[in-house]
Image (cartoon, rainbow, N blue to C red; front, side):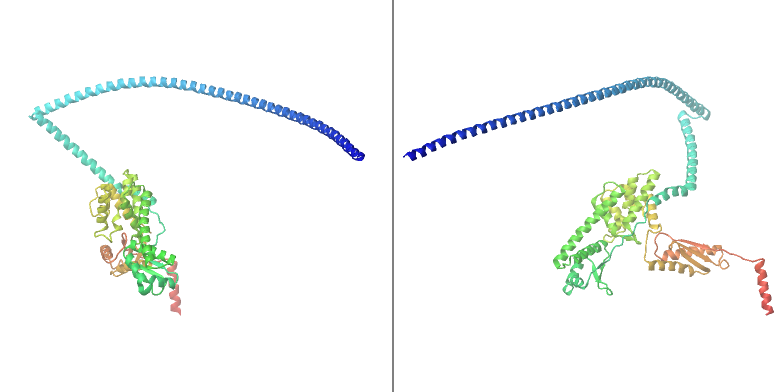
Length: 534
């Protein structure tokens, strides 16, 4: 029991000691935490003070900068106010000067008005005097001639009319003589600049008549079983499709209609590119090609109208203009020809003071009928006039279309300009092209017609067949016979040959006598002596 009590006592003593030790440690930890808290508070206080000082310094700097900017702005505003004040003073001075000038001008106008008033009074007085003199003259003439006043007035008017008519006839004759003397020079002054600024030798667009097939497999697909596909293409496009015998990969498109040819070419090209060739695909590609070609016709016409600045034009007319792209005349593209004519007509109209826009419009539409002359009966002039009237074109444009080949009388100077520009565009060098074979045959035909005439020694077709020069034997033909020969050759050329523009026929008759005197004669004599000696 004693031991148990002792143990219990020791335990109680240990607990008390542990409690005391724990209390002491807790007190020490509390002191350490308090010290740490005091350090944190001190550090936070120092940081806060530093931040406050920094913010105060920043605010002070910003305040100083703002004050400085306000001062600068005030200074700038004061300078601006000073400049405006100076300008205001200058304007006031200018207004004062203008007021003085207006006063001076008003005074001057008043003086001129007074002078004019005086002159008007003087003119009225002179008119009154002239009327009195006219009346006196009429009365005197009537008394002397034994006529009444009305008869005398009629006689005076008749005499005055005769004198004025004589003066008018003299002036008209002088004007006509002056015009005839200077017509060629004036025409050159108008035509040459227009020709230089109008026609351009652009690369000629070749209209394809063939389509190249890549290989025999595609060729077989295009032909189809028993020729079904190619017959369908011919039916839908209105063309004849023929493979060239010597080249099985070249498909020739034959038709008189260039639009159908273009539709067929586009459709076949798309079929070849897709490699899917069937009846349904052929119908689809032909429809797409027709739509694309029709759209391209309108786009081409719109581009031409926009290029020439001729104003608004009906879409149907623009589509007809686009069709001219696929029309040629003597190898010359009709659309390019129409644009050239429009440009030259506008240039000449500008120099002569006429309406340039109307002139260009007439030049662009002058060959409009060629777009469908193979589909509609009548000449291209008649067709063009019909469509121009249908779409209510200006009467000047209609007359220019009708008269550019001389079929009807020209009622406007613009019609003459269109006819001149049409002739220049068609006859200028390089405008119209032809094959080499046709070109050579035409030159040979020209020379043959000349060589068939009696008395011709040589003939030359020059300037690309636009001039034929004939050299005759002067001992066989006299001057009158040479002139008759020239007329005969011109008639045969006109009757037998087809030619673009016009051809100039020139006959040359020249007798040349040559005789040598001097060294040449001596040399000949020496040679004869040497021959006799041998």
